[in-house]
Image (cartoon, rainbow, N blue to C red; front, side, top):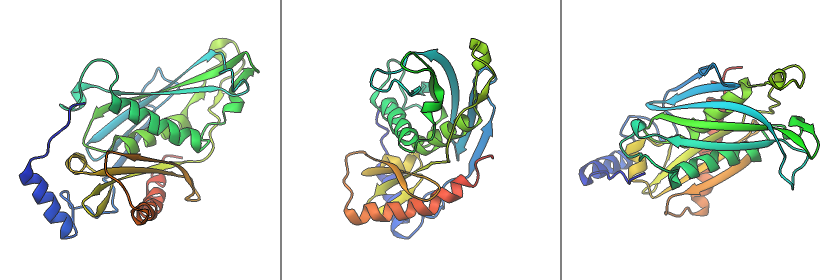
Length: 258
């Protein structure tokens, strides 16, 4: 993805607003954009969801197959996550092989799912050491206006919660719900000057020095954390980011369909 350059005029305008206590889209520093969640949007998938934060629009499809377990985890199923950033979603996305940004998005979202133990992978073993269910989480960015991490993570969570394991297709018995536990929510903040901004939009990302994503479970316990961009965070800033995430995560979680 080529770097989107924010003009000096817009940069100064955004900073003046932040220093006055507001954001370019009039949100509070700890406020997400409006959240929209749809499920069952891909008829051929085992589970699917489409999530929008403002104009950032992400669709996730879950597909499953039967395969071999990894040698070091013979008694657990397999999960793999892929993110596609297609050029039609943003002029800053480039066609061709997977780039570092799409790899980072996939890894951060994957880590949040794994470290939260969202999927009970032990229940996806067919024959220990020989045959297990393989989960493919495919993340597609349809429109990009900042913060793919939270939007993609929420779409993946919602898609997994609605997914069904297609056992009958492989003559392995009756279909059954994906074995999921809990509703871990990721909250991403951008560091712009001395300010921490929840759910940064594209303009805010364009002038951010640092980014931090925190995945929290229902008890607001940290399950995963990832720092991005080149800027550093002080201990105090990390603790402030955690407090912000603890305030935002329950609000986002409350909007997930049952």
